[in-house]
Image 1 (cartoon, one colour):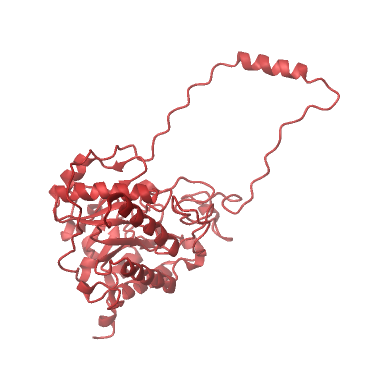
Image 2: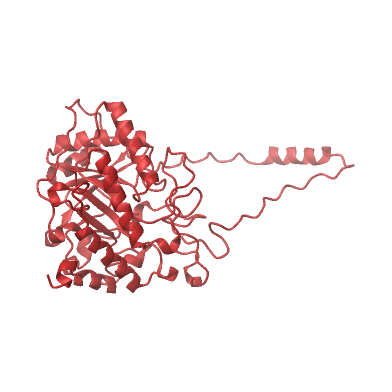
Amino acid sequence: MSAAHRPPAGPGGLGGLPPPLAGAPAGLRGRAGLPAAGGGAGTPAAPARRGSRVRRGLSPWPLLCLLLWAAACRPPAPPTPTPEPLVPTPPPDALSPLPVATATLPDVPPRGRERFGVGVPVGRITDYPVERLGIGWYLNWQVVVDPPRPGGVEFWQMVRVSEEGVRPEAGTLRAAAQANPGSVWLIGNEPDVAWQDGVTPARYAEAYHDLYLLLKAADPGARVAIGGVSQPTPLRLAYLEQVLAAYRERYGTPMPVDIWNVHAFLLREERDSWGVGIPPGLEWEAGLLFEVQEHDDLEAFREGIWRFRRWMARQGEREKPLAVTEYGILMPAAYGFDAARVQRFLYGTWDFFLTASDPEVGDPADGGRLVQWWCWYSLADTVYPTGNLVDPVTKAPTPLGAAWAAYRPPGERLGR
């Protein structure tokens, strides 16, 4: 959901937001991708008006002659401009044949604040007082050769993919991998969402294969993570199963994944509706039909993470770490998501991340814990400000940012 890769404003709103609810302040309508009053998803369009017909009994020839004369006098139309591709960067350079890729497992699971990450969609992380928040790592949906690391925070790289190619080009990827040995590399951002990276399972498998080999050749210690689908639902798991099948069919080996990755939003899955739609290449009409007020449903949130971990175990990937690299509250306060409600959701997810474990499906290197890292959306955003930890203008912590810094794990709150 990065600022640079949000869907265009349209009938369904921006970033999967639903139409305004009744009683929403008028100032919100038509802003930040919300449809203007009287329009938006769910509002039937007026029927198209047909052109006037020539009445019976009158000859059509005078009118036809007039139209032909007008067309002959009209100046030629200018050529239609060539649309700019979504990702104009060419694919990586051809790669020399390399041995079959083998996943690399992290040696030591993260500890304490190393698990806590944030997304930085606006500006640079050095613009904000992150050391006061106790952040362990961050991402900004880009590849950066020399990323700032205030207070020693870790930076996670992200390569963007599309049907046309990848971004950035291969030379930049090699330089960044060599300059930042051992970094985590996320391959794509929500490849299951049309207005994010939006690629078919076959195309994603191809891009992942080439990028995995490129990054490992530049830095054998690179930790490569699969791109996070938007939410851990049965529909998105079906998309991932097609990715894995396409990879095996094309390359004759299982896809090597160092770190599994998923986003954990609660958004509607339906064609031509608000939410995250249907993944490219899948013929489903609908998946889970979350309503607006279920956007912070902690039970549904926990169920999704358990679902994903059980799915990993069925794929034989149970021993791999799992990162939730994007989640939070996208709905505006006008929909009922005030600061207290968002804080309850934030604390509830952290309590779950820190305590949920299972010896059958969790990471055995991390005591069976289900999730090893998580990333809140976001540090500071101007389009989706509900979850802001810092004010993007004043750079001062928000009440939610203060709550972030004040959080104590469940054991500490109980005096253990």
